[in-house]
Amino acid sequence: MGLWAPLLLVALRITSVVIPALPGTAYSILAGALFGFRQGLVLICLADLISCSLSFHLSRRYGRGLVTRLVGARFMGRVDGLSRQHLEGNVVLMTAFLMSGFFDFVCYGVGLTRTAWRRFLPALIVSILLSNPPIVALGAGVLDGGKRLLGFALLGTFALALLTGWIRGRRSPPSAAAAAPGLPGPGR
Image (cartoon, rainbow, N blue to C red; front, side, top):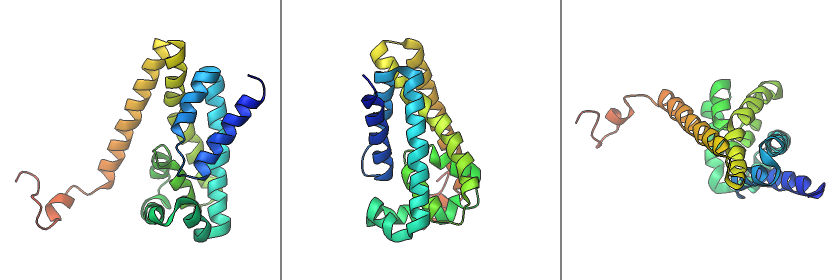
């Protein structure tokens, strides 16, 4: 495939993260399918490290105006809510959100807070190393017929779903449903 295929894949993945309207998961699957698990994972992890760092620094340097233009006014509320309420003071929650499907918005949101780069970077690296392997393995397993990689991909995806559910459960107060007027509470 030459030098151009990996460079094109990395460029497409970076673009899909910096401009969050573009879907990026397909590039992770494609990386596994075209380059195999190891090389595909290295390419996607490198692209994510570059693109998420770029998103963080763009929002830090140019502020809300640029972020609003990139993510759209519709999603700006989501970015604000995430960054102010949940991410600035909680590295574990920041890491978990970076492993979600909204990681591109999270990078912009964290860049708008007072979170230092040296605090953001470890969370970013951990999230990249935990969330990318299952998706790249899925791509590598689908075209190679690798049952072991497919199993790894499914288990990894399941583990990420459990982690997300656990974190969401810890984040929301248990009496929220009971406190909402007009809605039946637990056990009613």
